[in-house]
Image (cartoon, rainbow, N blue to C red):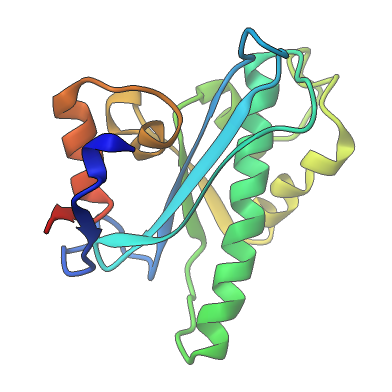
Length: 174
């Protein structure tokens, strides 16, 4: 990450959420080498990054809906872990954790898990994100591509977009 070599993470910027922490989840569909996609999510609190993940998926997904669904599910798992960590530290999160994604099809499916022709091929293990939403642990929110902070973890961005997203993550020049 050449552009961020001389930068540090600072956690002193006002949060964009009413939650103790929130997340952006995204995915890059099927690279040309092995047709595997990349999932990424970033969790922010107090105006800075507290955890992030960007990794090539171990499964080959059949659609962009599926790859985004897998990314959202992985972010849900991280949200549960963070919620428990915060609870152990004495910070109880009473509201559902926001996970922001830019694929409206996926947001629709996780909010209302009915038969969808776009989701019939998605493995059952990824559907537990729907239970987290139904139990009020997380909530899936729509996020336009221009505001998708997780993009910085998976693709080259224009300079201004890169600076905007790294600033939101609390990354600053040293």
